Image 1 (tube, one colour):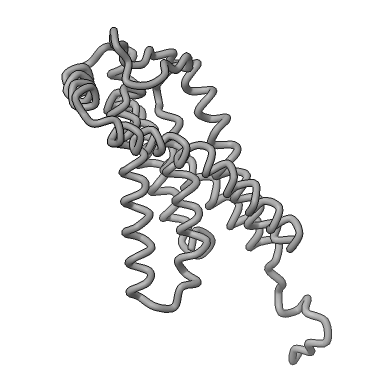
Image 2 (cartoon, rainbow, N blue to C red):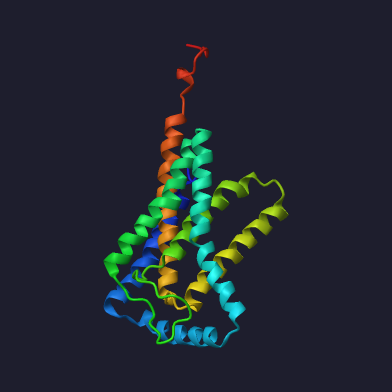
Length: 229
């Protein structure tokens, strides 16, 4: 899709970059977009503090679904693509799963925004800066790439809809859990999704176009093909 319609990837990059840029400017200048961050974080913290332990356990599980599970899927697919010599898919996988993680580290340490701070945390305290959310970047880049790989191979329209709906629910579950447990502000999550969209659009379009040009063969260069003079 990105090779045939590169404007889609360009649009994703522009949209994601604009959204991230607006939020990043508010983070640096303490702008009005941050007005709901602290009140919402306090509301969710109160909900989590009063919730049954099993509810919080379900929310904690989302941390691993958005982190360790993604890493495991990436390793499995990486080995598979390497064995099958699927270099285009492998390059996209590296960009979506690995380079996006490095991008998070770069941006997080650049902005160095503290995470929500509570006297009685619901779960463990995380030392890394919280802007943008690494889980949000991972969800947008990694789960989005999985959909890009596998949904077109599903012949049934109803199954495609179920897969898309299921992935959307899992993604929202992971993102909500990060705010619920006090790991991120709302703008951290939105900015992370924006970074993931922008990076996916840019990186995958470049990879698709590069491999398309590499594999393209002009008719005059095809062996055994005689063209009329």
